[in-house]
Structure formats: structure tokens, C-alpha cells
Image 1 (cartoon, rainbow, N blue to C red):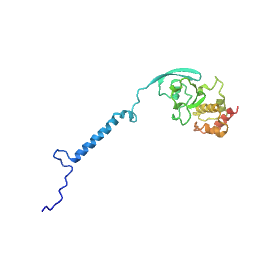
Image 2: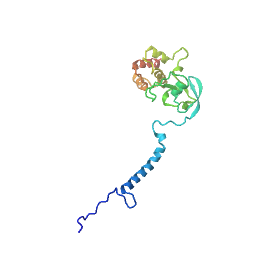
Image 3: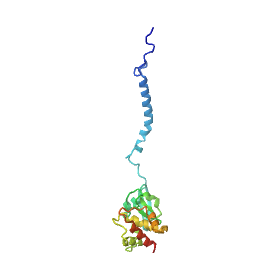
Image 4: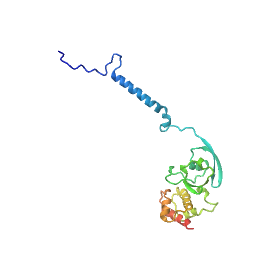
Length: 210
């Protein structure tokens, strides 16, 4: 009588008659499946990996009307209006702050309305009337808002001041500010790290009430 009724357990690692173990077979299947999954990912890795070089630039010819003068430029279609003003047209009065539309330092007027020039492409503004801080004064005569900012000492370091002034002019054009609280709210997109907010409000109120 067989004293061991249970047959011995076959070792998965032992070779079968065909020369392939069960473990080896499963490993081959797993590797093959991973290869099929990774192939398309690796093929497109150049496009999705951080730091991959951008594709070739697409250039366009655009005519921008800035402060009453027309400028025809050939530029990368991805150029922001802010960079076009500063780099292509040598108008550094419009400041680059956060470059993410959060600080308001780059505010300009487009068709009389204030916008963050870092958040829009230059090629989108052909035919528009663009006004920067350089275009507010008439020769040696300051714009009333510029004069009010000087009178009320509505700046300290001055970096945000061009955007503050352009935004304030746009605010007056919109006609919505009736109280100090309105001015605070409607100017909240323009950040002054020096904290000259009360003086800025005073300057805007003076121009608004003229």
C-alpha cells in the first residue's frame, strides 16, 4: 500500500517536456503585454515629456495700431501682446509681473477696455486700437489720471503704476464705479505690493468726479 497518497507537487520552476516552465510562460506573457502597452507611449514620448522641445514656430504678419500708430510685424503666432509691445515695439512701459494674469501690471486698453496683455496673443488684435501707458499723455501734457496719481502720491516703487493707471482709465470709461467700495472691487485685479491702495482710490475719485 502506498504510504503517501498525495502525489508530489510539481515545481513551477521545473521545465516541462516542451522546455518551458509555467512560471516562464507567465513571465513571457506579461512582458509581451507590457511591450504592447508601452510601445505607443514611448513612440509619443517626445511630445508629452516635460522639457521636450516645442514644435516649429508658425509666423504671421500682423498690423497693430498702438497709440495711434500702425506697426506691421512678422512674428511667432504664440507671441503675447505684452511681449510684442515690449520686445518687438520697444515699449517697456507695460510691465511684465506675474505673466499669468494675476497681478495686473501688464494692463493696457484695447478699444477703450482694459485687458491683461500677458493673456492674449498679439495676432488676435489686428484692427484694434491699443493704448499703452506711453500713449495716454499728449506730448508734455499728462493724462488727468497720470496727474492725479502724482498729486495723491499713488505709488511707491512704481512698478505696478502703468498698469494701475491704464486700469483706472478703463474703470472710468466703464462708468460702474460709484463708491469707494466699487473702486476697490473693480480695481482688485491690480496688485500693489507697496500698499498704496488708499492713495490710488483718492486719485481715481478725483478724476471720476471731474
